[in-house]
Amino acid sequence: MKYTDTLTTLFGHNLWANLRLLESCAALTEEQLNATSIGAFGSIRDILEHIVSAERSYFSRISTGQRYNAPEGAPPMTLAQMTESVRTTGAGFIEWLPKVQPQDTVTIDWDGTPRDVPKTYILTQVINHATEHREQIKTIMTGLGIEPPDLQGWEYFDAVDSGRA
Image 1 (tube, rainbow, N blue to C red):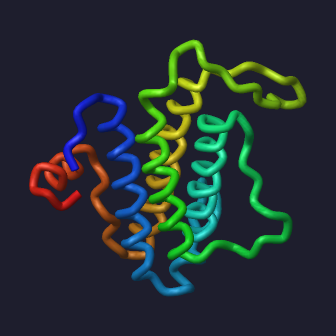
Image 2 (image 1 turned 30 degrees about the vertical axis):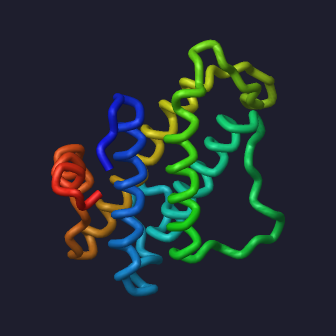
């Protein structure tokens, strides 16, 4: 799908990269999914779930103004559930992008102090957060001797241009 504006292209790439990484991780063994490395947030599985949960929360803040909280005692998500969640939030961000105005804010508890944060900063965090953690997963994969997926913007352009995205 070709996107016609800058933000939609950025969030289209974010969705594509998340899905591509999840697809690559679906081929890993349980032992590999539980691998970690120094400096990483946790295991591959932990980092994937963290990305997905954070995106749920970011999208909820953008669309409803409220933080998303997983149900108390919910079991860890499966890779299939993570993939479905990423598809939902990714499409949701793309739908909401034109609705977010620079003056739109959401109140966030910032270390015990409520602060009005512009939604544009939350959108910035979505991209930065996912990129940082995808790279941690790719580092762990490389340490395991597994070729991680190429998630660069150039690869995304090629996938979009050829109709593979």
